[in-house]
Image 1 (cartoon, rainbow, N blue to C red):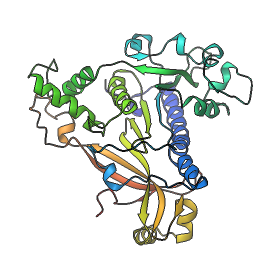
Image 2 (image 1 turned 180 degrees about the vertical axis):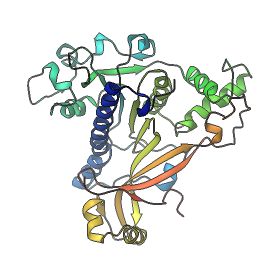
Image 3 (image 1 turned 45 degrees about the horizontal axis):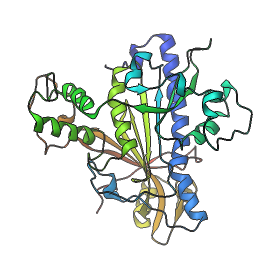
Length: 354
């Protein structure tokens, strides 16, 4: 399903889109802190070495396996502009049994809210929202944030479900993507088993992972990103991995990845000169920490799909060529720290820097 642009929406829908995008920015800011800055600070406090992400780790189709970071905060979140209809429960497992209610979350061990629980704590506009979200991140599977339609105010967003399972098979996700990109016309296996196997491998590449190295949360996240193309409205998926030490997002903007990296001070001096900044301003607005040779910063990398990873302009069927890349690096930026709200990102070229 083609997502409608803002110019194709009615007035009420435009207001809802504006609310969604604003709340998504707020959510993303908080998740960057929880997934990246908080583990970094924990390592500093405990005098532990932080497992920085290397430049090669952010290149598409990274295959190497890594040891999980004990300080990382893994999680998987789906944030929808609209409400997912019940017809999708076959593959996105949400129901009354895992809805956020006092009776269901009382079963969660060690859940502690500073205030007595009420249905209002899960609404995005409440100051209790992130308190509840952070405590539920440790629970396996997925958290679902969407428009809550059970109340009179129809443009309110809430954390509606936890422990949400994604049950759409990889083969069906690959078949869906294969038809979208016109590598098959109907069935995944219409051109043979080997062709189908390659399409399933390319599904992972399309979403920025290697099929052999993507763990459970990352696999479920990319499968849900493909499935949720079929629902009305925008959807954004966030997945934080303890193995890759990254935070990845899937949205209408494409694939994006956040990581804490070390960048040489010599290179930073070139960047701040072009950005008309001082070194002290860079320390205040961008540096999480520093050593003799490096600044520790949050790097954002966005990716774009090549012509082989995009639908053909003529709409005709084409032959899959496994060696042709479907995803490449598009843009890289050093981000301000989550609390430096007046600073702007700085463009860099680091992922392929020798």
